[in-house]
Length: 203
Image 1 (cartoon, rainbow, N blue to C red):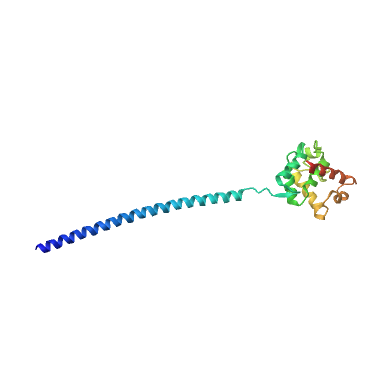
Image 2: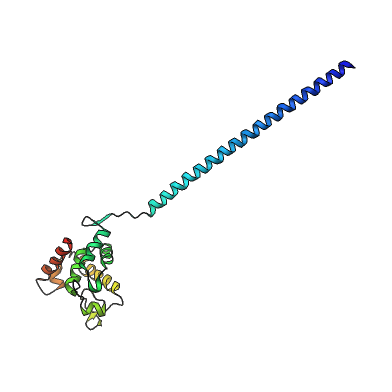
């Protein structure tokens, strides 16, 4: 009996010890899991912040306007500023439209501006055709006597540039000299236009 009781006590002690070991290991495992989970979460947060930063930078890069050289060694902003210095009266501030639309159509923006200034006097005060008909190039047509009329000044500017492209540039007439015989009866027309071009470039 005594031996049996001692054996049972030993078994009980062994079971308790085993349970204690299991409990300790369980706590260790739980703590390790929590630590690893915390580390994993921290890493996720850190990586997410980095990804977000990268994405933000990429979006900024995509949306960032790269001011490239577009004509005569100038950026579009610089070209616009130069043209605006030459424009006054009704066409003041229309440099960006003239520059961007001329380049889009393959027209020399200096030439377009120079013809506009020569034909309308907008270097100082725009003519009746510009003020009343939004006709910036003296285009023949209807709606304003024997001249073409436009609803808005922007339409008139685009129409004028379209006219230069359609009737001259598309036929290989790229300079004032080449355009002169077809554009104007005055043989000195090209000289006057080129003088405006030189003045614009010097601004």
